[in-house]
Length: 251
Ligand code: 13P
Image (cartoon, rainbow, N blue to C red; front, side):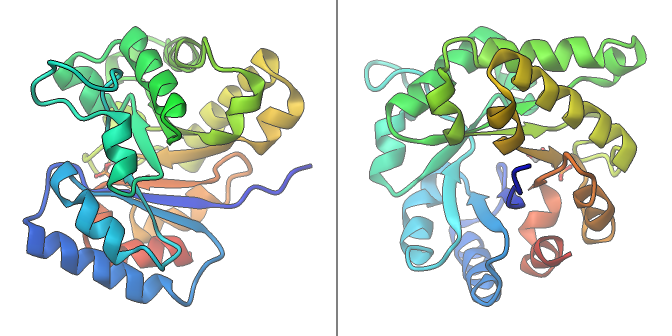
């Protein structure tokens, strides 16, 4: 049985001015220095990636983007490509965040293309999946989530799976304070893992890191992280305060 390292990622979303973002990154760097049991990562807004990657260069904290375009370059006003992210010091990117899906129209097909492009450009990927409240109430959580996983990974070979993290983020739990119960998170994580076993093999399924996201706070992180198939957290609001982010890492 593989022991998976916990991974805690802060998704800063569209928050903070540059000086605030640098201060937050410094605060995390100074606190994480003594604590490297977990993988720790942050996803600042695009304009801050380069200075923050510089600031965190000699620390264990990884820097990633919140999204990326599926194309490497071209007439795509406002878009940011994988090679650009690599060139400013990112080691990974999120794709498929529910806010990208709901607000910006990222379909499963687009998410799949972005994921493939990220790997082509040597970026690791955190693939975000999750059902809406309506879908949960209609009893289609597993169908929705497994379809998102399967479609995003449709062109991904077994040998590339060590570059992928999956983040299960139920939409109804994001920014609402309504965290999924540890049992609800565990149930979906276990289904994702067994589906990965079916798509690839048991070793790949056992090695896959599956983070939970949705109103993770210092006071609920421990019980969530203690579930057998929960391998860390993708944290929004609570990652904007270095003290609460570090408490989530340390629980
Ligand atoms: P909150 O932690 O603010 O609920 O956000 C979760 C999230 O969407 C992280 O990607």
